[in-house]
Image (tube, rainbow, N blue to C red):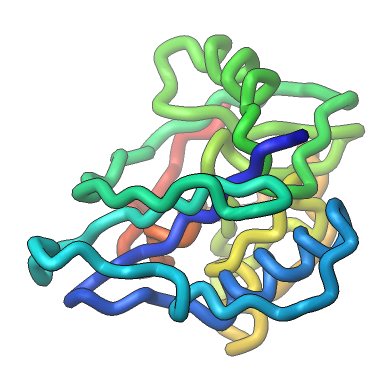
Length: 196
């Protein structure tokens, strides 16, 4: 049985962006295991009494049932440079616990902080986050992500970012990039200006 996980930001003892996590969790359970009932993660997750108002990462590990819920203090990894890595046979359309292929690609980052994965000429994601690019007027995110992130979807719905097809040849037309994921908002991410 394959294992998956869901990562939720906890801030001020509140689960952030929970509706989007519920949506992805329930869609995944339906697609992979055929479950129709809708689960509300906020009814299952019990915050530890010693959790303070700082930022924590809540990780839910599951397969056809929830196997483990864990919490850890969050420390943001600062990404300012990306190494372009081509991989046409990668697939990560669900948040699988097995990230061995992504980890293997990450080992080729050289002196860069992370990688930017290119699949069949199209920009996808970094090793652990969706990416957005600034074109001088708008924040643009690739329409070809490996994983449709919860923060990414929320920002698209709010019209903060725009989804477009981005090829590796388009990268030179952007001024800068930022990463986003469940733990990192657009405003929290430093500018990335080195993509090689």
